[in-house]
Every structure is written in structure tokens, then in C-alpha cells.
Amino acid sequence: MKLVVLAVDLGGTNIRVAAINEHGTIKKRVQRPTLAHDGEASVLRSLISALEEVYQVFPEKQIKGVGVGIAGAIDIEKGIITQSPNLRGFDGYPLRDKLQASFLKDLTIMIDNDANVAAMGEKWKGAGIGVNDLICLTLGTGIGSGIIIHGMLVHGADGMAGEAGHITVDPQGPQCNCGNRGCLEALASATAIRREAIEALRKHPESELHKRCPHDPEAITTEMVYQSARAGDQVARKIFQDMGRYLGIGIASLINILNPETVVLGGGVSKSWDMFFPFTKEEIQMRALKIPAARVKIVPAVCGDDAGLLGAAYLVFHSAI
Image (cartoon, rainbow, N blue to C red; front, top):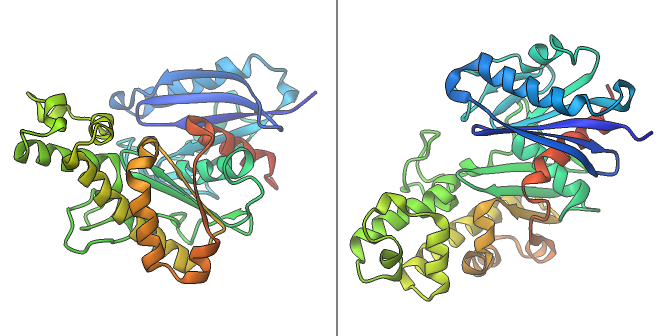
């Protein structure tokens, strides 16, 4: 009988739970709305309901534990959500204690940052197989990052190591949600692309981008910008060129500090690889030290949305608890 871990991706919009065996095969999965706007109790009920639906499929002795990935700062040892950008009211929330007060009381429960578990998922079953020193950047609404050195996740003193999205890449740049100016996240995320596109729509009514979204600039999406760029629109291409260069500045700094074997780029924006990566690569070659820059491989993520689930399961399977 192969053991399974109940892996959780606790997002601001949806909760995804999967039973994953020790070979990384997903045997069962469910999804529930997070119901974050209804408060802590509703989120916890939705989470426990999803876990219970998966739990009931397997004999109790087959379940090794529960692994949870969530955006934000996590106190790994205590299982507390120190701070979460997607779940209001969850700062200081003792999630592990809450879960162990349910039917899960006899199981090992591990909680970590969502970018950390995504990095571990890519190492286990994705673009980082066989790599012991890697960085995984998730280019989405924000920029999440997980750092693995000598096969181990780097957490830091407060559980907040690896916040590469908040490297300053332009001191005079736009304000980031963290309060700083010119963060990588403020200049190379989907939010950044959309902000630049809205501004461009006002200045360039002749552009292909404007034709795709003529009446409501707020309706623009990253996909629209990408399709406009592919169609040859120079305004949209310039947005990806700038985004790619800022990303390259950030990655070059990471390469110089950490000397990784591999940098994995995931998230929705990574699907626009052909539009931004040539500029990212150019910036890295110009700014990173020559030997680590020549060694590092920069590759697209493989596991997609399942990276976090896989990584959460991996942490439990390899836990010393």
C-alpha cells in the first residue's frame, strides 16, 4: 500500500487539495472557493471540507500527513501564518493548531510559503530534477520565489527568506504593494505589464493593443498585451522588452549572490517567454559575473499549477517529524 499526503494550495480565490503518493502521482483532487471575504471561520470550513472529501477516499493508515502551501510569511516551526497578502485577518493565524483540532489531529501537518513549495515541486518532478541549487520565480500577479541550496529550502530567521520580488531594480520606479519603490514585482509581474499597458492605451490609440481593448483600458489583460506583441505591435513589444530587462537585472543579482545551477521561471507571465526572455538573457549576460552566468540554466517551469501541491507533498514525505 503506497502512502499518500494530502497536499493543499491555499489561495486567495480557491483552495485546492490533492492526494499525492510518494512517486508524485496525484490520485485524487478537489477544489473549493476560499471564501476569504467571509472571514477566517468560512475559510477554515472550506479548507476542512475539501480535505475531508479527499481523506475519505483512502484508509486512514495510508495517509502520511498534510502539507500546505500559502502565500505569505510562515512561522514554519509553529505552523502560524505570520502575514498573508491574500487572506485578510489571517496575520498571526495558528493554522496548524486549527487543522489539528479537526479530524486531522493524529497527522503530521506542515505549512510553508507557496513559492517555497512550488520550488520544491519543480525540483522533485519538474524543471529542477537532479538540481540541488536552484531558484524558482513565479511570475504572476506578484512575483513569488523559492530558493533551494544543497537540496534544502532557505527560510531565514523569520521564515521570509527568498523574497526576490522585493529586490529593488529601479530606485525611482513605481511604488510596490510592500511600500517600497522599484521592486522587481512592481516592474516585472502581470500587474506591472497591465499597468504599463493601460498607460500605453491612452498614449497610443493607433496601436494594435488599443484595437484589442478600445473602450475600457481597465479591461486589458496580460494575454491581450502578449497577443498584440506577437502581432507585431511595437507598443506591446516595448512593454515586454522593459519587463524582460528588469527581470534580468533581478536574476543577475540572484546569480551573483547565490550561484545557482538553475533558475526556473513559472507563473502566467512565463507563457510570454518568447517576448521577454531575449531581453532578460541580454541583461543577465551584461550584469552577472561571467562564470556563474555561463553555468546557470534558465528554464521554464514544467509542473504548472501543480508545482505547489507536489512540493507540499514532498515536504511531508521527507519530513523528519
